[in-house]
Amino acid sequence: MICKICGSDENKFIGRPRINNSIQHLLNHDYKIQECANCNFYFIEPEIDLTQQAWQHLYEDNYFADSLNNAWLRKLREKERKQRLKLIEGKLKCEKAKFLDMGCGEGDVLKEAIAHGFEAYGVDIAHNLSQENSGINFFKGNIFEAKFPDAFFSVIYMDSVLEHVLNPMETLAELRRILKPGGVLLVIVPNEDSFENSFIHLAYSLSFRNEKYGKIKPFVTPYHVNGFNAVSLKTAIDKSMFHETEIKGFGGSYTFWKASKFGSKQYMQALLTYPVGLLSVIFKKQIQLMAVAIK
Ligand SMILES: [Zn+2]
Image 1 (cartoon, rainbow, N blue to C red):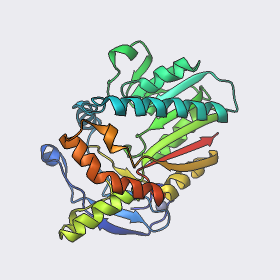
Image 2: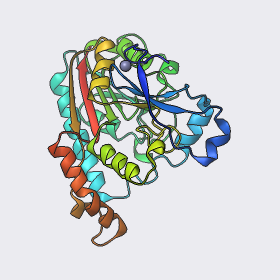
Image 3: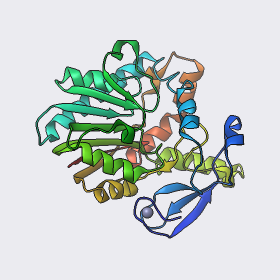
Image 4: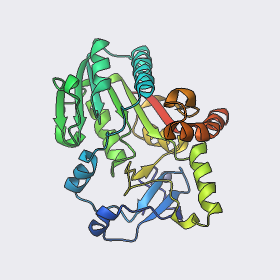
């Protein structure tokens, strides 16, 4: 298979993905995880053959179930949303009008965008809008089915989507088409080369399960079919004809003493993983990557 990002046909086998028992019967191949030798993009070979209905079912099945049960985490997310909206406003080189959250989930980014004076639109393959955000413009389906007009949006925000779609370059091309010249694209993906991933890889190697470890998880939550690092993410966005692309890492080193109740299981987990998160910050190999670019 050639790399979907850069077109190179040189890649190497790095492992096999874990498979969720409940979908095993839907899968017809022996899947491998490959790494592009040119741009470091991680992908599954052969291409995954699940239907859109099967994917929808996976995402509707409590995908966001435990995302909001921690007050401190909720506050952290809210702070992040405010910072990102500010960053976007600072970069905008066209009129401040329509804002798209592609993969809007519960709709909290859209709520923030409205508070910043944007007209908000959400698109998602599954309906997970919260009660509070249920009145916001929403289209259920993929971005191609939404058929927005050319140059419709001033801002397109896409957090935790590009690693889930089987056609990342077509998706970016469609986003470029519906973005205004001078509009801002913000993309967030997990960093597959994070210090955390290297640490997990080491743990697997030490327990002789090297073959089972893969950087991406297409068949267990969070269902990542593509894997990016800073190089492949920048390659993807630059090749899609966006400009002034800036990539930075974030996440890691979350303050464990705020993460949950003292002495609880979550607290102990957070305490044990804190040094890994701290090292990821020190070595600048944090768990998430954010790209901001202009059309
Ligand atoms: Zn490549």
